[in-house]
Length: 69
Image (cartoon, rainbow, N blue to C red; front, side, top):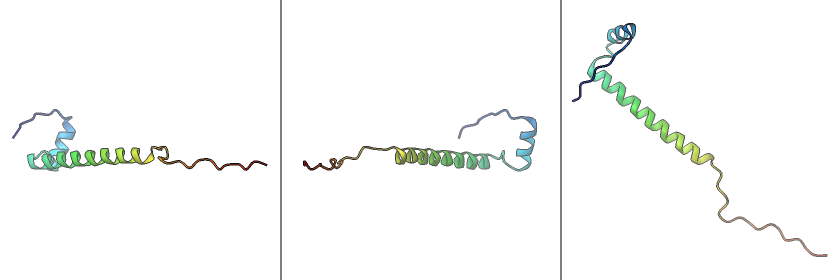
């Protein structure tokens, strides 16, 4: 287990403490959820970027041939 020390604005620390958000178990859950959210956001961003990239057709059809008169 790692111990961390953080500095928060007084009002934020007070409000978070009142809501029980500074409890080690709650903080761990909050951090795990945020890590999961960011990971999925990154995955979706990459998949969206790949889906919107235009790739050349691997087997393009030749242009239609014109008949000679």
